[in-house]
Image (cartoon, rainbow, N blue to C red; front, side, top):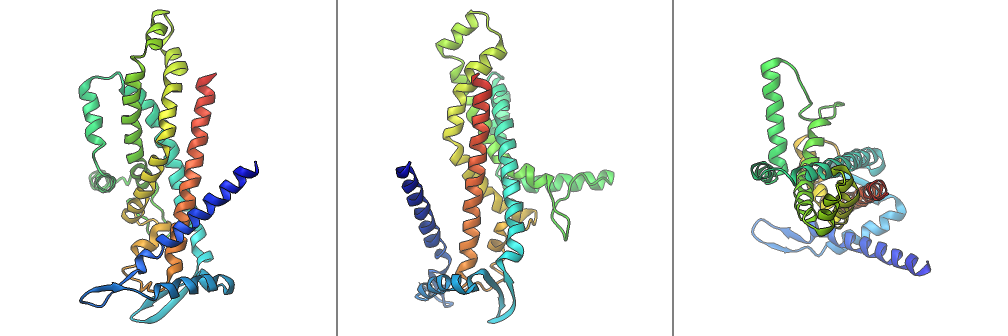
Length: 296
């Protein structure tokens, strides 16, 4: 028990150190108009960040233009809402993508080659293309019928939900389909499946008691990769649909002078890391639920 506790503390400390190091990357080099050079002030930025944790200055960030501070913001005023928005989107899309992807993949395993080819082609489409295609489709429907089936972007107090949800779920959903379909096809050729068929067991019994329970370990093994895909897609989705999630500062930096504001990058990456692990744990619990359902 104590050994596991120390291991957990060690891994947690290691992840924090990695995060702090990665957060320095945007500030490592400076550009004077002609060439890049190492930014020696990076050590000052990090030092000021740690000293600011005691004074509270590290929980403030500034909007600077041409060297003038236009306004100051507190991390606690806006970021909790942004964190909740991104976390809810990622967790819900992960659950839907994994759940539907599992059963669609089981169905696809026994379909004809041309059906698999269609899904294979669809899986090649990048998420930003899917998002833009959905926006165009909604606009065309609105122009033709006058019915707005979904918000294409967040404006003011309105938050787009349906299109970002579909776009964020698309990549993990298609990945799950292809992976489950491939593994199911091979599981169905195993001797114990052929014996079960020879005994006259029902198709539902074979799939629920033999196929799914042997597919879930592959899903569990790829879960880290799936969550990583979703984190990568979240930046694109929040950008396309103008969502005020935790990645918003990544695409506002071209408007803001963040030179020296090491805390902005640190807290953004920290939020992404926490959301990643919350999503990962939630999806592991869903797999555990599937194992309980289909193993009994």
